[in-house]
Image (cartoon, rainbow, N blue to C red; front, side, top):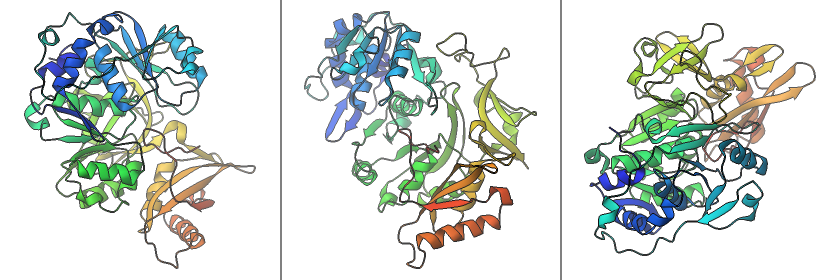
Length: 469
């Protein structure tokens, strides 16, 4: 049975006292518990309130959530870079008046927050300090709602009201196994994927490694120096990693992919690079939480999942349009914070927005319904073309998007990233021509990219997903 709040999780944690590592700083469990005890009056002041957390580092977000969970009625971690209108809309819909921040920032005051509060200082505390008695006998806690913004790229994101229970439905709480893991955190802590890594490491008794926000090569160096052996990232981020020299030095036992379609090419590449690791891709969403994991080395998921729900999660493919519907097991949010907008239908099913196709004994992901490109009345799914382009040995990654055209509405535009050290004769123009020729031999004519660019890198969001706009 889940314990009521994050402080309770810390009090329960007996294995691996090292908790989080930021650069040269390591925080231990007893450090944080002693600090939380000294900040008890500050925490109690937020009893029953709805609070936003914004404008800080990963360290700040982690400490703020540990302190506020179980005291506040609801907490909203605000992603960095949100436009003011979105912040104002969140504050209005959630009824937020209090903001907790690392440093005072005037732009938040204009968004409707009446009070701003700084987190109490984490004073230097000797490692492995004796736990104060009051830290082990806290007052009763509440089931704080965690208001998690969706990762939509158009319009104002919606807020999904989770609880610690719904966020950790599939979290493994095995201290004996978790103590051996050193999880790396590359996701944005204010997003669902980042919170999942944070909570898994905290619940499982693992050390969480937080690289500095520098270049990807510097982040990998930090992970190597600190013996990271478990990492979760999007397929796009993993493709970038595979191009970094020295990545094979990481002693991975757990390689996890999520957030985008994991095709056979990336799964095969990761198994070859890290033969001792379990490679799995996870299907999850902000609305439904963590759905299921696939670790058989193949893209998509077994069709048997449609009849035998994995971990109690029911799956269904809507015959009308091939949309994947899911029905989580147990408690799950039924509405967004705006009660007029449902997440689940009247029968408890969630429309994922993901299109799938049954191919033999496998259900393959085609892509987001909203991401399909209309080319002269025919629907084109970018993922199919991207997978075709990645099959070329000198293509490290590819992205496909729509390009407006006055004659057929849209044409397909492709952007490719070539592998390091490509042959001198493979100029950008030659690569573009070879990529089009390869697609002509593998795809229907309307799917062949009309335009191919060769870039140095692909644009991604803070969560590591491709930006196709």
